[in-house]
Image 1: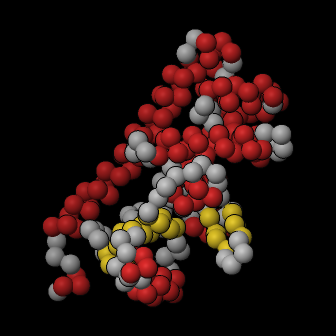
Image 2: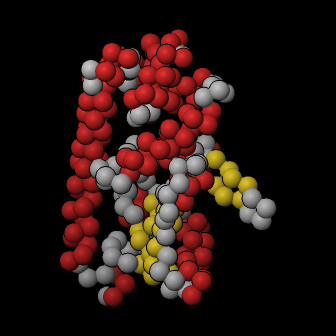
Length: 231
């Protein structure tokens, strides 16, 4: 659900980290724990590896010590702001098949939703993900793809191109994304579309900051409290 998934979708990003979205039931956490143990993965920072923290929306961070994966960081999450529940994510997943393995990856809409954070590094990647989708499939539009492009494209020129090619889809999508009113040549030349896209990004960043504020407060308390595992 992170940089490795972005590579598979054609928005190349070098990443030494591995981000995983998991179902946090007891059996699955036991399986994950055994797999992490094989790579001598240790929890770094807070919170500790417990279902209660994952269900609260926190990420648990691991660092691998095994020689074949030394210093690989693995971040595990169950809940993400603005992203579907795990059962829905799993149902809508994308499967990439290779000669010797199969990888299950967040669907592209799910991955884009997960990238809508307050962090600077996520927004260029989000933009590349949606651009790559459009540039790869624009000659094979489906209603689902057109809706996705109209809702998520952040490159003004490409957003205008989709709007011009698919005027029948605009009316409905304006209800979800009012800035589509500015997806015109006039909106581009006057700078109104670029300003609206920036305002949209700023709003989402603020929402993410508000979401994480109480979680960060709890993380701060956990840092000050002795670990139950040390009691």
